[in-house]
Image (cartoon, rainbow, N blue to C red; front, side, top):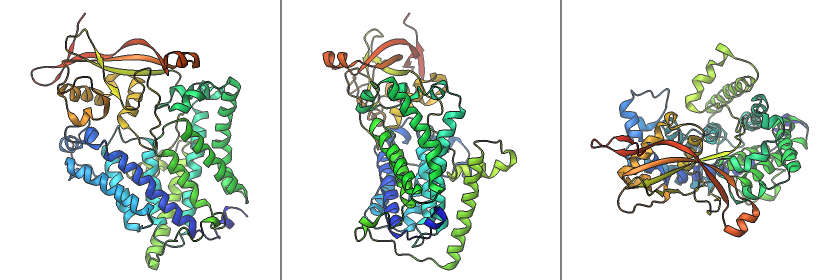
Length: 479
């Protein structure tokens, strides 16, 4: 029995379970935003949405967002809170298609105007999966076109991730050495990553090859006769669990696990009989027809996005450009090129330009004695963005200079994004940004000193800055 025959089975339980899972992921995403939204996007944040919407002419079709019209701090907080509440209601079984429409619209509003802090692949994946979920939730049992669409999204997510790793010609992937460096160089390592970095070289190469197998070959099992689809789902779930145990990737792995659920028929979920109540909803025939047309269009867009991996589409790719602002058919492929080595930016403050005290982030590496944190499924977006900033220069990260300005102003909503602020009640006079090379310490060093990291100084990341009389950043040279 292939996928086509499998889709003839009953999917009432998997539909109810998937909708709860999507509610859970939405709730996590919105709660994570809620606790940092003012520091990131508020009127005195690093990237104020209100400033962006006032300085740029409204381009709703290019950046669809409710915040073009309403963007006060209260509105931002209320939007994140409402999204979280709706997500928890869906998780508890009090779900309605309107809830999924509202959650998608609210998240799109943040996503459209939240760059660079809201531009990660899991943000795009949540929007795409969330849009499909709106149609999937409107009929019980779900239209099989939507089951197929979610299956194809899972296939494209996994297969694309494998393809870009190979076609990028990254020497670490091609030589099966990527997992030798991944655990140390990933954005936010956790304690298990420290131990996994100590693995033998043969195991690192074996696990790198396993990544290619799971991403390039296993997804095709989804479309083969049974029990191949079930085996594929279990293998892909194991991959996600492995990633969750060894890194911090926000809600990405939970969302990918959720995408596996619609492929499971009620026969696969027999143990949930009586525990999960099926959705009770039958839309009018006209709406069913419109949903079928929409699903067909989305399937065609998915096919175009998949073809784009191998050929230049030219004019044929324009529908993807039209769909992109709405998060309807994004491209995927994490770690196409593996980063070798780890640089970190350490921000220090001083009143005299001689004695410097460091600002500590909640989760990104800083003090060598701090244990790597397990923070997922929450995503500390400033900590994450600092990893990307360290890969380049401050000149290509305008937000970084705004961060320094807010620190020098002593802005509380931004300082709340730090775990340790050395200047209590007042800002420092000067700020410096220094780049260090970090490496995991040895087991022996950890036992002797309690330090999880070794670091060596490299160079200034940005000039030493202060605020001039007009309140603008000004560089200072103490040499």
